Amino acid sequence: MREPTRIIRAALSGRDGQWDLELGDGRVRSVQPHDPLRPAADGGLDAVGVIDAAGGLVSRAFAEAHVHPDKSYSLSDLPDGIDQAENGALDPFRRAARLKAGFTVDNVAARAERALRLAVSNGTTAARITADVDTIAELRGFEGLVQARERVRDLMDVQIVAFPQEGLLRDPGAEGLVREALRLGADAVGGWPNVEADPAAERDHVRRVFDLAEEFDVDVDIHADCFLDPEERMLECIAEETIRRGYRGRVLVSHCAALELQNDADAERIIARVAEAGITIAVIPLNLADGGPRGLARPQELRAAGATVVSGSDNMNDGWYPLGTLNPLDRASMTFWGGSYDDESDIDTVWSMVSGEAWRALGRRGGDISAGMPAELLVFAARDRAAALRDPLGGLTVLHRGRVVSRRRVMREFAEEAAR
Ligand SMILES: [Zn+2]
Image (cartoon, rainbow, N blue to C red; front, side, top):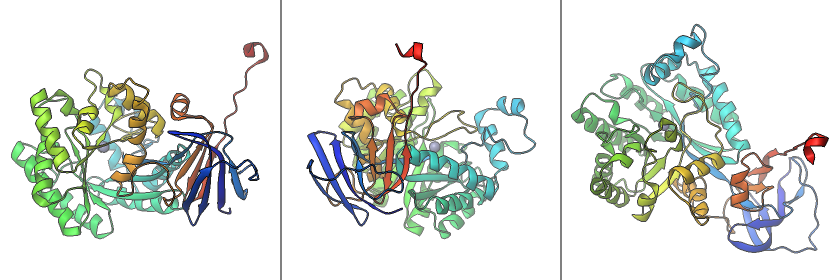
């Protein structure tokens, strides 16, 4: 597979006309108005030289800031000895813990690889992925994700979070395992203070997470206030800790569904602290599945206050959630709806939450395509973002480091009489 050197006849969002992109050394070398004298050729997976976008949209690739592929497909591929009906009757905590007890390094690696390949085929070329590290999974989930990362290394860039899902105080032994994962190269330390027994323990959990982050000089990637319960209030504590520790720009907090239920005065104060702390919030549109209030963490107010907001996948076919497509276009559409966006111009906002802003959340440059940036690119059959969002399984070619890594061609055939 040789490196493509050119994408021609491309549409770019926000710019009129057709464009040609020159690629080299894994980067976008130049973006110029389309020159009709440039040779066109079909750029298949192993073709050389030219990808003719034929007027389709070329976009920066998507990035995934929050997903748990150690668990993906653990619901459809139940470990031996677990009865499906009995499993379905459990509450999500117990179901997820039970499935997790069946993790082996091999089955995690295989399921995670499958999930990550699906994500790549949907246009994601960088992801921060989370491994449960606790006394149930021990290091099997983490080691499985390390193996999966190795298997997809030519397709996407992956960061791994060591996540004590069962708590740090509630699950004595988890902290030592998280420390071991960090010693083995985990890229960020996770947490979920709300699972602890009382508010003092929740705050202690937050302090311990930051202690670990400082000890290993890694980012914090923490779950907080995941449920539709206004009594869940750890986001503000995390913002205070971020400011106190000088960890601005190094903290991502996911979920924050409860923020929607706080009264407006409290929410305004919390959001101001989040913006001051330089925290990135990953909203999780799957929270919409909980029904009732949407639980989408007030993305419009967070952005208006200057906070970075991204949209993450969270769970897929596991003890917490049976569905999930790992398709950023679905995520963007759900964020549009769940975030009460309604204007066509808001399409750029929800798109940025799965692309430019999500790249920034992973420590990379934000924004759209420009000369000099890494050639993490998507060539859509659709002509613009709205058309791509309306057809999330439309034609798509994915480039990672300037090379085609995946191509989806779509054939829709109709019976003769149905075609009329
Ligand atoms: Zn999560």
